[in-house]
Amino acid sequence: MPNPDLAKLFADNAHALPHPSGTPVRLVQFDTSTMPPGLRDEVESQHANTLGEIGTALVNLMETSGYHAVTTQQLDEWTTKAAAFDGIRPPIASIYCSACGDKLLDLNITRPERINTRATTLRSVRCQCPEE
Image (cartoon, rainbow, N blue to C red; front, side, top):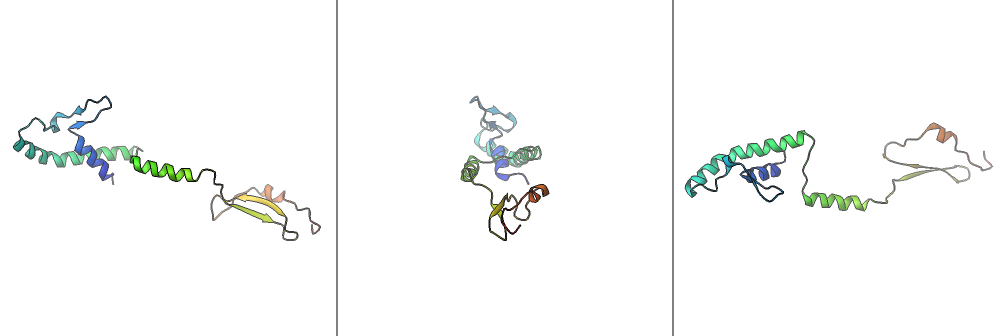
């Protein structure tokens, strides 16, 4: 379902879309600013449904094309959360010799249900204790 807030933003601004140049792009078929007040209210109510559908269609086009809008507030929150993870290393599983207790190997755990390593890595681990 397309983002309803973004669809409403498009619909509410379709009569004069803000342009970076400062001059709004006017869609004259939806601009009621020059109409007399009584007629303006009637035409605006007729346009409301059409503009809502256009807004929903624009958001759907964006989202199905791989674009997703986020608010500046959401982006700031995500940036703050991501910054909190800087420098945090993944959990490490250490393998120790059962005879002498020396650490033999550290493995980074990227997924809790599975630790990936090469068999050659495990075969090459040797302890120097007398039990060997």
